Length: 151
Image (cartoon, rainbow, N blue to C red; front, side, top):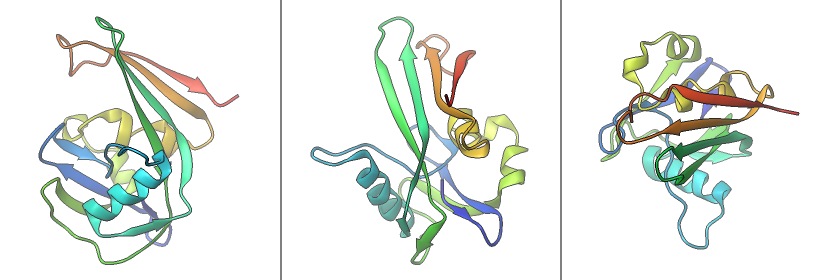
């Protein structure tokens, strides 16, 4: 998540391809790349912005109930950025939105509620991880979720 501390806005991406809907910029780690460096690179590729001094906010575990396959998403926040925003790419459109407006937006606008609306971002320090069980039959229903507190 990129947060503008002067305006109270966050940068939102309206994804068009895989997992369409509102989310934050992100992507996959490349061979030989750290998770942190991946976050910096993906933001640059998708938005044109250079981000600095990322703060780790936690991890989201997606676990398939049928296969036990696990997909991990590492969540970072930055309030330090520069460059010129690219408003549209192959990934989708990028736009600034008031954080409160984002939290009050209808759930069906989001790629996943566990990214842009995640308490990892909006209640920093309270939780360290989100655990979500899912399967292909109820892919859009992630009803089994638990938040790990930050002890």
